[in-house]
Length: 314
Ligand code: ADP
Ligand code: MG
Image (cartoon, rainbow, N blue to C red):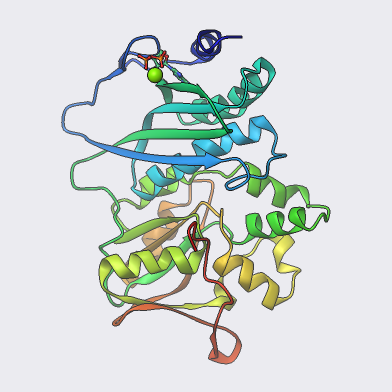
């Protein structure tokens, strides 16, 4: 297989959208941004051994490489539209690329995202995706709009992926549901869209709740306090000891849930807005004057995590 065979193979399987005036096959793609919309653009790279264990199934790598990008669009309150895919592959392996596309395109089709272009090179396994979405002008959810007195919320449950990764690194058996959360994160696109008129600030949790909430605080010039006992846990995690669970939930990476702040007046509206999506949201704390994120455990005692979240160059 040559580079061009690989690209033809990708092209043959892509489902297009009417607003892709020119897709894979030219020097660049032509995308029609509808009048009166803002274009939201994000990029994320997944490196083998850093972002996923080397043994991860190619279909899961495909899914996850798009999912982490759609999660960023979700956190902006954007409707996903298009993406590009830059692949660095050790060899042109058609079985690998077919399986990768199974995962990648399954998620793309779920969200009506068209793959409009990319790049294919030889090198260590690395996948770079750029995802593009659309918002009404001025309505994107941002990190810098949290207000003192806001509630802090998270969607779904936290810590499942971190627990799965730890079990798998230690060679223990990983319960199917936890593995699913690590390998096939569900970007909270519908939730992001529905929250766009209600949330003040929003971020997707990729590096751990405390680390990512700290980004909202920093950008908004505020502090936050969270109650560890309120962190939503899956049935699998609820069985673990609180010390173990809190660490996964507050500091573990790869959750791909949304963390957002909103006025306490809008509590009922938020619950209703998420009624017809695949997740609900839980209130876990509040925004306060000051800076930094403080976490409180049983009996209101402040909890100091050993490590707050994933940092690449730490
Ligand atoms: P160029 O040399 O002009 O950059 P390429 O040979 O890299 O062109 O790519 C040819 C076409 O195939 C382009 O339209 C490019 O966007 C597309 N393409 C290349 N690799 C991928 C990929 N991994 N996924 C989707 N489209 C791709
Ligand atoms: Mg190229």
